[in-house]
Image (cartoon, rainbow, N blue to C red; front, side, top):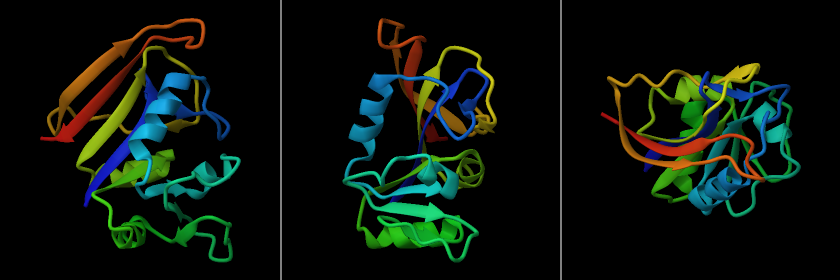
Length: 163
């Protein structure tokens, strides 16, 4: 089973502000759904709570230090190692870490692949994705997309693999 991160981040690595996305990119949401469908997804508690409901078609695994918190539609664990153990039971070829910033910081050390939607703008935020160290990662694909009536910013779909 490979460990992948999937994230949308600005040029300055902002991934969130006030527990929300500071942009709306419908094509990125479709990409996220199509890429993660049927796979286990690992996230932090705040990321899970920012959603209106658990992600359909995926095993939702939530990392939290709150021992009494038991949300409906998710498996709760205390750390990334436990989350990966639960994900192995899903018998999937790939597991995705979907946020937030603290979980990404831990998971990038173990990840095999990063699916990055790079939003070509600089925004303020309070959650950030770690810097991709290009000496450790290789860009294997990139597709540029341009702003339009539904997408305020230019963006690129990038896939990185550990070198």
